[in-house]
Length: 90
Image 1 (tube, helix red, strand yellow):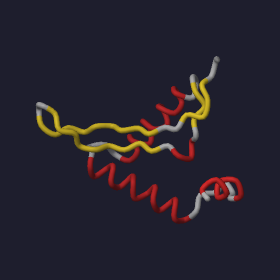
Image 2 (tube, helix red, strand yellow):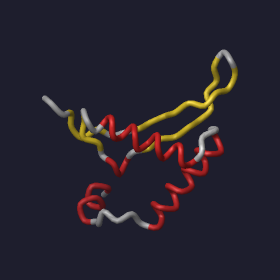
Image 3 (spheres, one colour):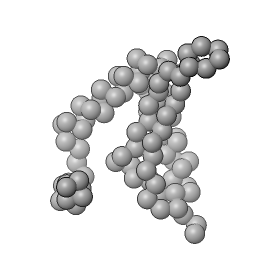
């Protein structure tokens, strides 16, 4: 069913998708100590670097900041889920 939604839907995000993305940004900001602007810059720069080597599915990129437990206590951890369509240069 997801396949048909992608094929027949427009590339324009729905209000539901926009609200979900905004909520994610708020949660990221609350969990980590990064501003929303900083997180946007990190995401943009990561995608720019990776796109030199691989084709990325921009619609399904998910970058979050969570708290991870380490020997030194809790610290922020950046988690990136970036679907790769194809590897360039093969």
